[in-house]
Length: 379
Image (tube, rainbow, N blue to C red; front, side, top):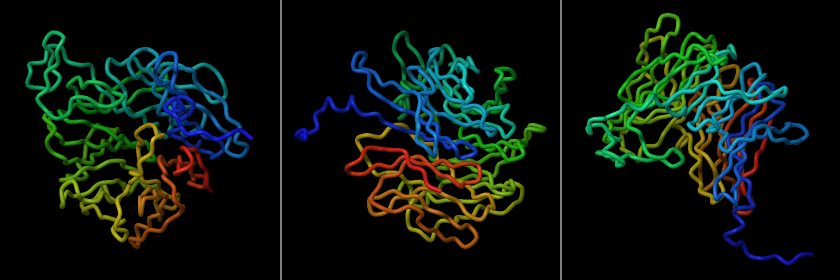
């Protein structure tokens, strides 16, 4: 038996960090990101891998330097992902049945988020538009020769680099690469696109934060793609994220709070009805914890999860993450009676959450004090 030794700093290069597992619509496969460190180039390398749910057989799907954010098409035939193969972060797709990855977009700015339409032919994007040349110095990111001038708090983000002064906007594009359309053009960040089940409506979040970094309010908005009209669903004094349409398209669940106690206010799960005048209702207040919450720290985690409440097919319950007593687990929320129950248990730190179309199979990344993050499935 080999003698045990202490961990040394160089061991970090031997770990593979898994992130962003996405269950296929039929629940038979999981695509995920595996991140490793290249000793020779002193860089992180991110690639997509596929695993069979039943056998656990795993194979490498892509071979770029930075491939991330995999998202299944609703019909299960392809995976969309973001890659820096061409320089900036662009949309690519790869057929599940085999074949090479294909670049879909060639935008000037980076693409930040990807959401498939129900028809598997169109993708909604949150993306940075082309940087404006010769900014006048009022807006953050103005250039003065080789220098950048910032007048606000936010100027740089991990993994993204220096802010170019532009705010993300909502676009749609056909997966064939044609018909790129910009749907929003605001002075704020527009993000978190979410399609209704019938594909007619596109919900998104507008973050009402000024270029100097002030303000924490956000709006939930809905675009009617049949005529381009837009509806303001909420106007919160606090943050808002992760809109998710109910199976009947009558309700939208999302995360947020009203800012009552400033930044100390707990984020909850809310439900809005976009087509009537009723105020949003909080459906997770019976548990005095935040949703989503994965704030158990670890040395071996990667990525920034995009969370949305997961609806059950009958629309009667939701799945989400929350942290209690130093452990993050999956919870089920029953909006009809404002009741929550713990689905998983144990001293674990859960990150990411995805499910098959019928929510019969759910995946997440789980780690503990003695185990790095691994991908788990439960039925």
